[in-house]
Length: 338
Ligand SMILES: Nc1ncnc2c1ncn2[C@@H]1O[C@H](COP(=O)(O)OP(=O)(O)OP(=O)(O)O)[C@@H](O)[C@H]1O
Ligand SMILES: [Mg+2]
Image (tube, rainbow, N blue to C red; front, side):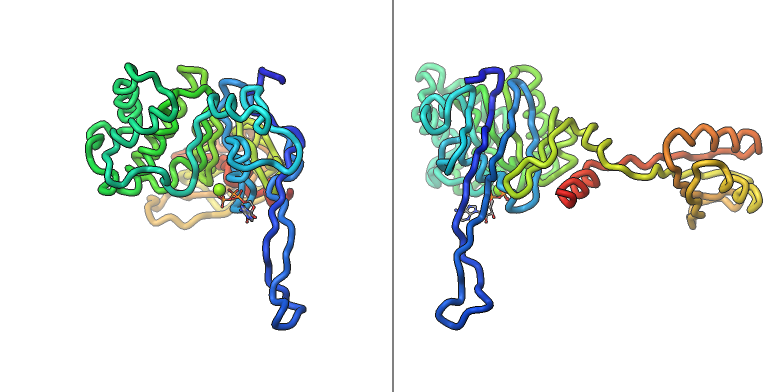
C-alpha cells in the first residue's frame, strides 16, 4: 500500500449503538437505541515525519479513531493503514510500527512495583533486546523527566507522574509512528511544556511521525506542522495552523495609544477610507494628554493611511497592537460552520 504515508484512512467508518431517552413512549419503553457514526467515511492521511494535531469537540471521534488505528477496535467498513500495513489484516506489523498513549487511565501498571520494574515488564513484552533494556528504560525515564522517581512505587506516583510513565511506556520500543491521545491532560504547565518540547524535538531530530490529539488549540498551533479538525467523525478542515487562521474572515482591528489628539482630529480620522469604527477606550493608566483608540479596518491595507494621517497631523504614537485571529477563533468558526 502507499508507503509515503505513515497513517492513511480510506472511507473508514465506525458506528456505535447507543441508548437515548424516548420521550414519546410510556414507562416500558423509556429508552430507544440510536446509531452514532463515531467515524463517518473518514478519508485523511498523515505524511511520514509530520506532527499532525487532531482537534475536535467532545465526542468528535478522536479516541475511536485512535483505537481503530492501533487495532484495538475493528472498523465497520473502509480501511486504515499504518506505515502501509492494514490495521485489520496485518495487525502484528501495525503494532510493531506504533506506540500509542491512550487518553484515559493508566491501566496495566503494577501498583506494587516501581516505575523502573513496570517498564522492565513492558520492555520484555515489546521485545526490547535484553542487553539494551536497562539503558533504554533509563533513557525513556529521563526523556519524560522521571529519572529521579524511577525506583519509587507506582502506587505512590502522582497523577501526572503516572501519565509520564505511560508516555515512557509508549516510547519504550522506539516506534517510527507515535499516537498520543491528549498527552498533556492532567499535567502541570511545566510538564505539559516538556511533553510538547519533547514531541517537537523527537519529530525534528528523528523523523518520526506523531498524531497528537488535544483540546488545547494553541498547544496544537505551537508544535504541529499540520492540524486536522474532526467533527462527527469527519475531517472538516485540514491545513497548517497559519492557513487555518487565515481561513477565517474577520475585520482587522488595531489598538493604538496616541498623544495630543483633538476630537476634530478623531473625526477626521474616521473619514479615512476603509475605517469602519473608532472606539475610544477608557484606560486608567494613561497620561492626561493620551488617548487609547480601538480602530476597526476593512483590511490591513488601510494601515499605512492611518500612519500617514498621524504623521501629517504631528500626533505622537505611543503604543500600537494588532489583533491576530487566534486558532481558537478559527476552530470555533470552522466547527460551527461544518
Ligand atoms: N463503546 C462505545 N459505545 C457506544 N458509543 C461510543 C463508544 N465509544 C464511543 N462512543 C461514541 O462515539 C462518539 C465518539 O466518541 P470518542 O470517544 O471517539 O470522541 P472523542 O473525540 O475522543 O471525544 P473527547 O474529546 O471527549 O475525548 C461519541 O458520541 C461517543 O459517545
Ligand atoms: Mg477522546
